[in-house]
Length: 55
Image 1 (cartoon, rainbow, N blue to C red):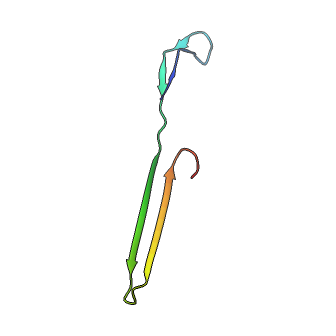
Image 2: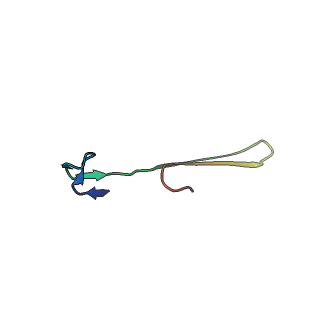
Image 3: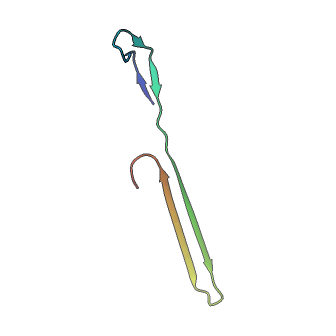
């Protein structure tokens, strides 16, 4: 969270009040594994991140 103090308005003849700037991100991981009839194992992973810096 970032707190912004009073800032000049677009016409520079007054100020807008103090405000807050929020930033958020969401990340999920999906892991799936299974075995077949010959007992071979398989594994799949998917990762995706919304917003923020790249993974």
